[in-house]
Image 1 (cartoon, rainbow, N blue to C red):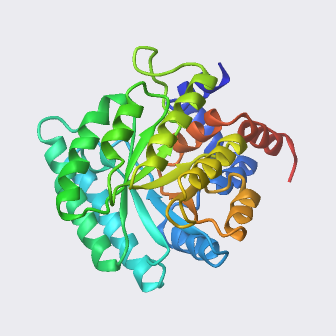
Image 2: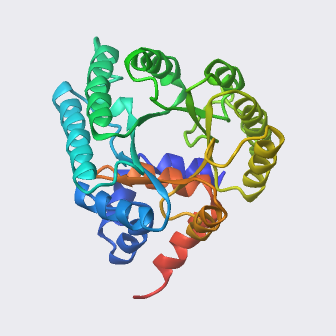
Length: 309
């Protein structure tokens, strides 16, 4: 119930204004979002990489309403890639892209525009010596996203996919994508989906996650285990051992600001760990989904709001 309420608030301009203007809440936001500009993202990436972590940088933005705005997001990624390359970080830093931010849902040629701009971003990423992962959004865009992914992989086979275990369809999608050279980030999912397409019970989502993870760990692809759940992290390790996977043939992924001690523990144990680093002006919807995903995040946020200084 709390999660659904927070997801509803992700569309509230009134609450967004409150969070943006309260000095204490701004400090809390900084825990989960690297900043508003590319320099902030580069600095956060440098800090993490120097701690033996990998990063995936996301320029936040989903509410693209016209082609000019989509071009702006494309150009922001091209600039980010240049900055990461100049800083010598692209060996450990990749980027994550939401197709909706580069025009996917625009009327008419939206999917074509998103493919064109994604190709430009992938070309720049290849030149910089890094990779791109396509973020997954709400269920209404899943087929379109997988279609664009298939086109991109013709020229950029290392393009990563994201699948969400709360959707009924995801186990089958895992089987389709668990192929040699395929990179798949498996997460639980963070959108307010209807019962017709998604599990509503947290335990059912977790069981689906394990089934999907078994498919990915058994296959010849590269699983990216995106979770903060201690039990699922332990299960991932067991499945990797059962399938005789060496460290580095899969990776763990966690969000910026969430369980940093666990990120460092896993890296210290020789695991490959990648931190999802978001930045940009459109941080509010992202923040509310993060709070909705994990009650501990809500408690942290509320404690900060109630504590002076």
